[in-house]
Length: 339
Ligand SMILES: [Zn+2]
Image (cartoon, rainbow, N blue to C red):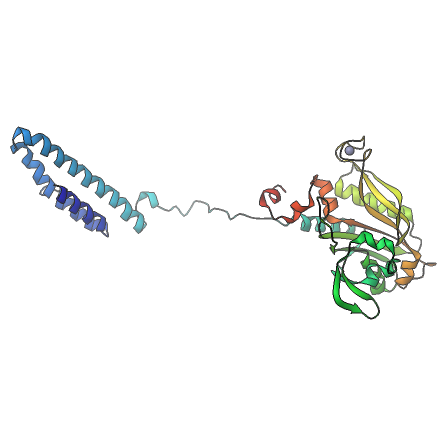
């Protein structure tokens, strides 16, 4: 009986199609099948044999039946047949996961778009810059202590005979001189959005980051034009409720210079833990220094201008209340999918 069962199961497992399987079913369980024959003999057995042998035969029958059903499913699955595998071509397909542009890319597009509406021309100046454009031409001569604030990366063994040492662009302000040289004469309305590099890393500083630099030069440009432009940007980007204020500050390449603050998004300007008495610091601005105009080839007696330079990540983090700049560069989908 054991032999019969083993032989039946191994033959069933070896079948390659339902036809072969059906033949085996007939061979074992059909009307004249081997198992059926044994079952028919049960009544002729002695009462003692009937109980033990009878049970064994019935059990063998059951096992073979189950093996056939199971093998039938396997064959149907392999051949792609059967009701379970019926394929409905009218069901809509599964949509592939769709990503989106990175937050920084979106912010760059949004910022460019806002300034475009008031006549600014978008440009990206180089990521590797000569010292003259980054410092000297911006009224920061060699060894000037103000340079320390820029934590600059220097490019070894690369020096321009006229413009000096090569550096990784530490701020987009170098674009001011490039734009003046490129156009030759005002009106200038530049928005330079580019990568900058500094030796710094913490929750609000990354060694590589983006800045956007606005520069407007023409006859009769004054501080009210600067204030109006800042106001327009802040209301467009952060929302109509936000207010702007400018505080006196010092930069080498603007005179007068300002720090620009916006009213706090958390407390609405009343004062809270996040802000300083209702205000949050956005970045620097000022009227272009006469020396810088001169270095750019323009006559400071004829033209005036204003400039501002802010971090793309900084305004983005302020808008969405992100507290660690490194999240923006971590490629962590759990973070990115929230936007
Ligand atoms: Zn606040």
